[in-house]
Length: 532
Figure 1 (cartoon, rainbow, N blue to C red):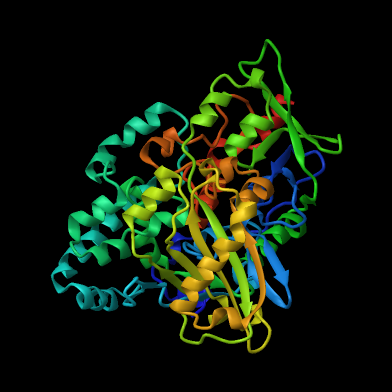
Figure 2 (cartoon, helix red, strand yellow):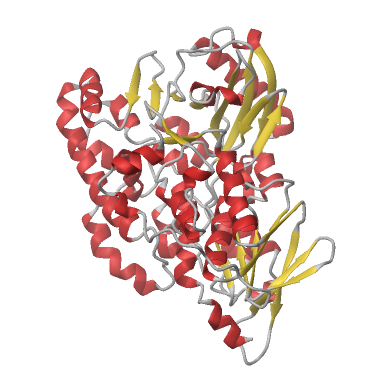
């Protein structure tokens, strides 16, 4: 089933806000917005700003758009570098509608079932789907007495979703009173618990507790410490399903880039690095004001506002002078608790593993202990848990005929661990390969025909992520909502943020929602004309 077919069949299709309309292309005198970074958040921000009447220029230091969602092409294989799990597709659909188009004009989304096949260390597996009855049967296979607890957990997930996503996911938390207003609701939803703690309240079986608590790892959080508000992901997936973009996530990136340039007349400048956000500082201004960016070449691009899709901490520390930062000082940035990092291995085989699902989670012998090593001890453990992506299960075009394309990622500590990935990458790849060969991909090394790796060093060097973190600040309670770096800079006027580092956080729905928040915090173009 495609997303378009599912949408037509759904009674709640009204979730797509607004009707398709033809936007007016911004004229040459329209206020100018510069977006730093062409990741998903940056492109979504550019589309929304362009549809509102801003001229938009996106500046990207890499040679292609996408950021963490860029694409590697190698030996006839196509590998999505980053996100592969598409949920809440209406957030993409909205972007196309803002430009008078339909998502299905450019991208075909296909449903994935099971959402995930979760394999335990003893070889047993759980097929995680969006079918409530099938899920009850799966739960009963492991622990019949936990079926009712599973149902109660999903009822709780639905309640958290209604508040955390539908009500608050697109609301800026710019002032402390914004946070104070929701404290009663957060208390009622037990947001002080961790996700694993909330699951454990309803479910007793240790394996099922893993099944229903792993989701925070998809957004860089430790299930044992991240706020239980992230339990909403379980219901979000049931509500809208899990989807795959034919041609890979790169097809969504290409489509978004086309909206910016072809539909809205914006510009995307690739292979150019921003080294400074230029400022106007005047005694008449309450705060310094962003006036554009300076590139590594020395060129200056003037703008009425700047949106940074770069790492928030990097933006404050390296693109703004200390004199302009009274709140986000170097010390405060350094105190941010960063998420884990990832080791990612992209590989292709000359053999197809037809019994392997699209998404497989291979849990290791330890759960809490391994996560403690990653998040707290900052130790590269001898054991590992893995997420295996096999896009060719759904889309054979991602590999040559008769071949399979994969990527496997392993959560690892960020660079504060001191691990020398120049030395450890290949031995770790071999460890991961052995694990896969012993479980779901027999004789893997004999069938390898292409291979490449991404380590925490690449998150630091390619994506300018502090400490090589893969998801920005860790989504613990004290780094969520008001306590997360704000979508509107607290130090510099006309500077805004999109992407995983700001509210509401990482994951495709979260990152797309950060751009949606800009519709609220960025004034209309007329405001900037009046200031000019």
